[in-house]
Image (cartoon, rainbow, N blue to C red; front, side):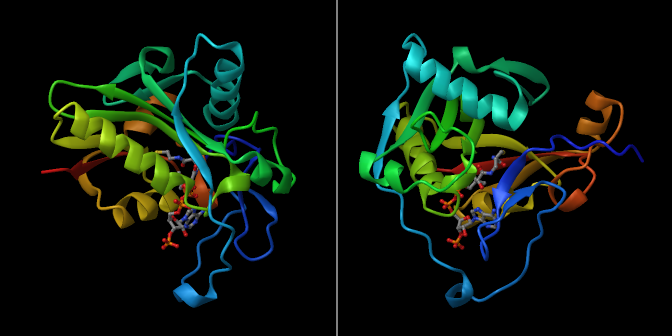
Length: 215
Ligand SMILES: CC(C)(COP(=O)(O)OP(=O)(O)OC[C@H]1O[C@@H](n2cnc3c(N)ncnc32)[C@H](O)[C@@H]1OP(=O)(O)O)[C@@H](O)C(=O)NCCC(=O)NCCS
């Protein structure tokens, strides 16, 4: 099995100690809700991002470079450009930014979602929250915005693709009401020619497509 993973960057942080964690070092444990250290809730706004604005473009590029090293995403059998999407950024209250813990330069945003309207569903093309802002409700806020966008375009569902190793994302989406819609077995392995290591060192093989029905 090849040794390389998707990235050597710390993408997560420990819920217990706050330690920055790479994908391979990350682990999930089962706990009761009262045992999860609560982090201060995100306060701020979810704003439409204008990629013609150099500051907002830099912010969107930085978070996507950090997670995928790309402004494109391969999913649902084709390549999608973030520049073709409707983009939203989570902008924290300036007072909260001052409290931000050490970590990568977030360029003043907590998270980003890129949306594309398909004829019969809204596609979440990319969805990321900076590690400093994980588990503070930013993900929930970005999904609520996506639901609002889908409803305002009369689209009956939202769909997205993730990978078999991404247990935190599978947990997160299913807690938000998404269901598994389709699994493209071996899709990532075919694209890369091998299975890179993902979360907790799990080989990344399959594309898992999820759907949230809004009707
Ligand atoms: C998945 C992700 C978007 C969640 O965003 P978030 O802002 O941390 O999520 P929220 O704070 O809104 O948390 C919602 C729930 O997810 C849980 N959660 C968030 N991060 C988690 C993690 N690293 N491990 C386990 N659970 C996690 C929270 O505990 C919360 O669950 P609870 O209500 O049961 O306590 C974020 O972790 C992320 O950006 N991950 C890396 C990039 C990625 O994988 N994107 C998705 C690609 S498809």
